Image (cartoon, rainbow over all chains, first blue to last red; front, side, top):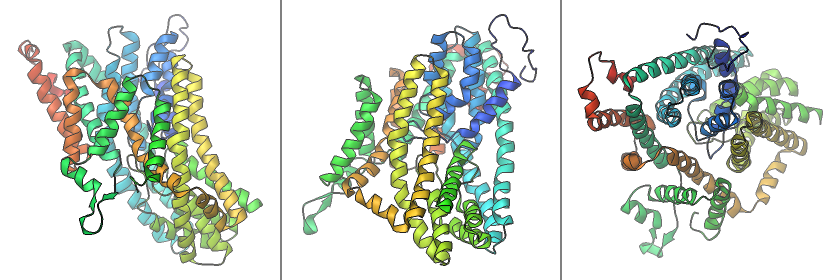
Length: 281
Length: 258
């Protein structure tokens, strides 16, 4: 279905098929995946940016488009070089969602959330651990002798496989998404998928909260030999207690309807005040 | 002044590697070449770039950690080393602290400027204005490239001490405090995502993932694999009736390899 290039001259009715052209646009836009990277939701803007032309094509009603944009503006992070695989899966799911009114919209994000971690694990170790080191090895050994080929080979050794993989994964992701969705519909397994993906997604978010939220209290109480670091006491209760507390407070504030921007400012103030009175440093 | 502008342009393009597929254009080995061309000593540029490349080898972003800024560190380190006639040690001596100091600026941008743009994008999304959402992304990215370009131009123009002085002028508690705040900001992203997925049935799995990492310190891939197995088990346990009506074919259970 995806290799069939639909004739663009059927102007009547909305076009809800993903074409090769759509996938190519996603591929090109995916190059900007880390351009607007930020601490709060990481690749959210860029991921949305990559899908915008497709979403505009699939959703003619303003409300549908608005929902689609909002769901992709949520947190997202993975290895940028292989993001096209996720984008392909998302494209397939959005296509389904546009065609089928019974489609569970939430599953688009649960699938994203549960796949981004494993993909990043694979992608980071291959691109940062292996390929980059090979490129650096070849490049620097020449460049240290003053050879201009050093930087040039560095770029080529890394980017030729990189771009080939990025391109291949765009349609592979889409195919995987559509094939998988068809099977799902045949057997009526959407609820199974939603449950399974939520379990997996939440475990990954829990794990990321423990490893990526970074806050400690190195200050000590008592003096001289009896001085005890507060962090040691906290670790005695439970490791990563503070990140969990931070998550809980933010989660609770969001539930109270406090705006994300306000929370962001609050976090900055907590950091500065905490440092000033000597809790954090 | 012209040299300073050209170096700023190199920084602008280098930072824009993030719009060009994270293609490693910002690495010192590449910027060293261009800095060398601009400074009129290609060979020195390439050698200094390679030296800095090795010094910054551990400096690349995995997950949420942002390393010292190799764009400004690499370009300014190389440029000052060539202009002062110094060797690799001069490049390292200047490049490393610059990279660390500029990281403070960059963190401010990534932690506070871009999230604000991201929240504006939320508003545009609410209105269904896709073009404006895309614009927030582009403005955010170009802004950072521009900022690093300016840092390089101004620093080169005013000399190596200037950038240090500007950054030193920010009171330490504010500098450290903001650094600490950037460690907390991911909590906001995770909490927003969790709000989306959570229902009563699956709340425990958040804590399970959290505790496994907190106590056992295993990688996110490890958690994902465990989560996949667990999801498979739970789905089969809780949705038994469907298993009974399952009529051969076997592919029912392939969902985990997706």
